Image (cartoon, rainbow, N blue to C red; front, side, top):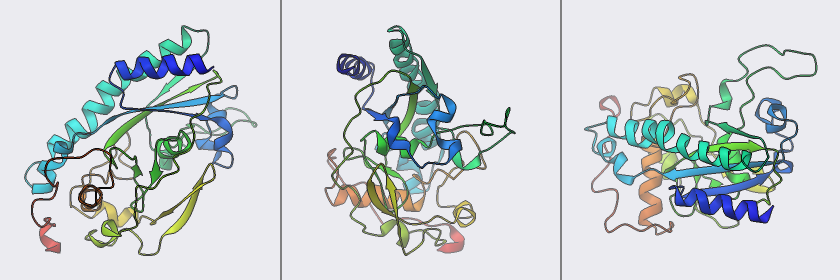
Length: 279
């Protein structure tokens, strides 16, 4: 399947994909049944994760505290509802034109599952939704940072992802062996409500171990520093990239030179703003 993989990646990059990774299904051993791709498609052999970068400028209005809609459109809706579905569709058709079945999937939040009852005793309750962050790490695209966000070596937390579950046995990519997060704790320090725990815990994905702070979602929802509801389910984990913690991560990674992508000027121009009640 090496030819299928190289042709798929080359084609997707030609269509604008900036991130493409492949995971084998054995890397999902031990996940919750409702997050296991094999419960969705028992014959599945591979997961393809693909993504596009979020423009740093999409965070500018939130960073200045003057316009939240730019991020919602160009950091969320437009990427997840226009550009990425187009890429995912073409990748799905590419795989199926070669005789394999492929399931295109939006990154629905797995923490709101299940949302139904099993159709049979040997089936899990719907809906089965693989965790996109888990899949991205399993596909070798990056790591989970202290803030709980996916960090890739080029873009840090600035990307949106979709995935494809297929019965094509595509050679998996190696896990990311480097380190993006340097445990600076800026995400923890700059959260106005203390929603991120000061003491991290170890999580392991496909043998890769990372230190991550637990998130108190109720405190996160009350933060008001720029976080937004999940695109697909308001009950899911808030989108924290535009919040104080996410922007602190972006600012630190760029100022510390920890990302492959370099900018002419720092992201953070002045002290960050906080909600009036926390000022």
